[in-house]
Length: 197
Image (cartoon, rainbow, N blue to C red; front, side, top):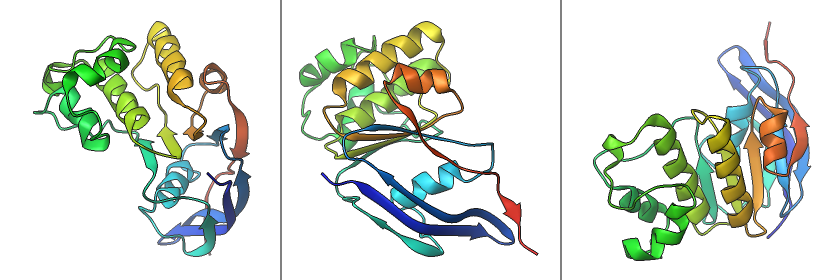
């Protein structure tokens, strides 16, 4: 597992420049917070790290594209599939529901429940478990506690800490408290974006 090194990352959408010269190193195995005002490019940066968007300029080093776990702003679950099936899509090593039971128990979930029957907070917990269960060196989370009340945040954060397993965790959040729950600290603060002339 390597440090993840961003060097002079630029990204624009039309005349809106959202990232300019972003240079930063995320140390391997740490819990790193990325913060900044709305629209400053936090999610764009995560998508570049995940290989879903190319930067206009600059380089990303240290990311193994075959060893990633992710929680997006949206849960991105298959509604008609069960909780267990959704997790196995990212973690096929869990061939049977029984193997998932200890993991699901940490979040108060059942493997056979269809996702469409779940509340928003329960879906979020499935999305978190899917990212944690995936074989990965890097886990990226975009606002991981969306839709969770304070008690469930505590439960989810404890599960993430237990299951991180030395992997690098990069978290976009608006809340320093949420980052603290994960045992992390602010690593990268992005300024607001601007329109080019």
